[in-house]
Length: 192
Image (cartoon, rainbow, N blue to C red):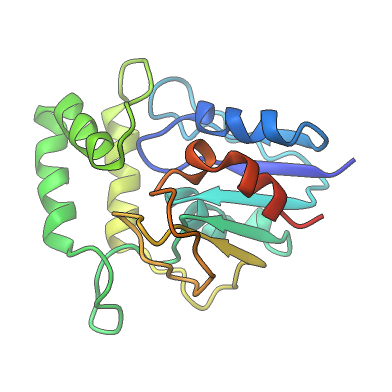
């Protein structure tokens, strides 16, 4: 039985993956929790066949040494999020700095604005501002381009947040949350 690790993106929780797990009940799923709305669960299971990273979860997986050699599928994912001289299509750093400035004083407002842009709701629970801030800084500062390429990059042409950074062929619709909007298509697209 295939063993697949799922890593959610910034501002989300493991529940993001429930529609995919229902659409593809065959594999043995392992879901990390980056700890934005409850205790973090970051223990990596052994003998993984595949890692699926959503948005920041893709960058997280690219930078995790223990996952070297495990095939990676990028779902609305990126190896670099913020703009740079050689990556002008990235999000302007000033946008991330503005979010960082507001996060301490009004974490709920920052999360509501972020999720409103995506057409989703923040997960339930008290936001862990320190974890959200740390990973927002990673999104602003880290660059994993050149580390390795995903075996498959999936996205949507109407994603308001992330261009197809890995050059995959996007679906025309689905936004930034393909695990919620296209779980059946996503399940069929995963490597067998």
